Image 1 (tube, rainbow, N blue to C red):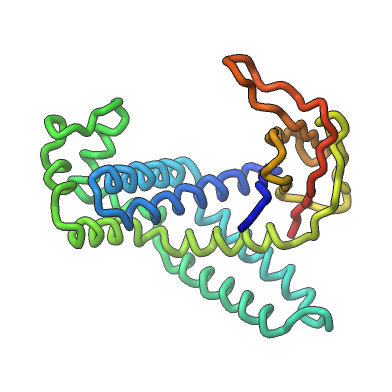
Image 2 (image 1 turned 45 degrees about the vertical axis):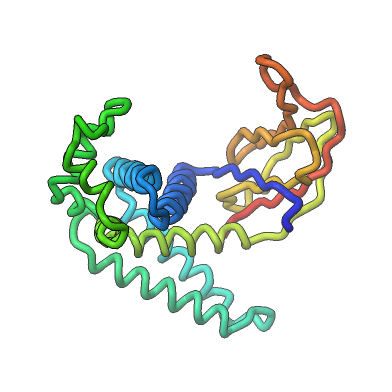
Length: 256
């Protein structure tokens, strides 16, 4: 059992979008495996959010750049005797294959999903609170009540165009998260501030602490200075307050 809780703080917009998508893909997978109407609704909601992010961002280009950069970085350490060559070759092969798959896609990824009349109707009505009731979208209501095999097939069809993107994001974030070792730190009276090494291009901060500690980490800052405050949840409607205690935690500055 994991007795720690980890808070992540992206240091650039690209990683921020990747982590949001990662969370949405996880939610989609969880709810699409369910059999109830609320599960199906939640899966569709997650997919709508995924599509919304893709409409606003040129993610294909961003991910291809990141995959290429990672491949070059890994290639530079290929001759290092301390590196497991088998693992490195496997990761490089994954990076190459995912890049090929994405280059083969024409146009914006996932936009062909909107060719479904049903999905278009759901998208238009979902912006209205409670706007996808049975009297608003009887076709959607009919779909929700269909056999699980049918709905799962449709969900797989609609989410299929995003599979390579999801794999790429998972691989990129895993490389970043495991790119450095944590250091043991102490937040005096719940406060910790540091300046990241300017010679390194950090992309993500990870703050891990014991779950038994009655506080949560509030992280702010950027590449020049970062601040971590450990806040105590209030017992009433007041705002959280900074902990007066010294809080031990692990800090990982992830680069890659």
